[in-house]
Image 1: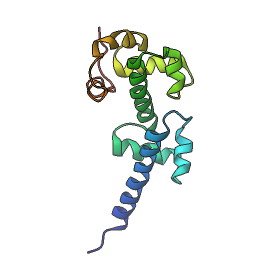
Image 2 (image 1 turned 60 degrees about the horizontal axis):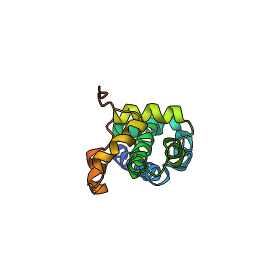
Image 3 (image 1 turned 60 degrees about the vertical axis):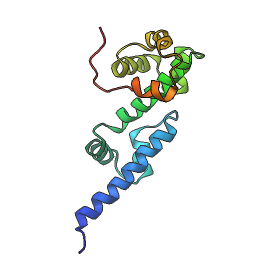
Image 4 (image 1 turned 90 degrees about the horizontal axis):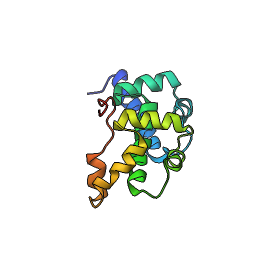
Length: 142
């Protein structure tokens, strides 16, 4: 029993999308954009964006920002870097955009998160990461 050409293409696309996601996970702190990611897997930027969203439920850019914010949260919990240093360490080039995305995903600004990180002090980092994982479209904390 052979699979259809559409099924084979879909499986090839999923393999390529996994490569893109793995690259984002590895190189989140590097300057990445959809065009560069698409070139890396020989797709157009538009096709990559649509296929990535279908496969993972968010755009490549959103996925990248979520990885950056996760890493920023860990660095802020550590407490030895300023918010600005964390911003640039995780690959963001604009403190304003970083703060906006952080607040959007975490529900509070990075400076507030850093101050409240003392609450999770003493909790193993693997537990703290899971409990404080950023969630896209979370209702803001009021």
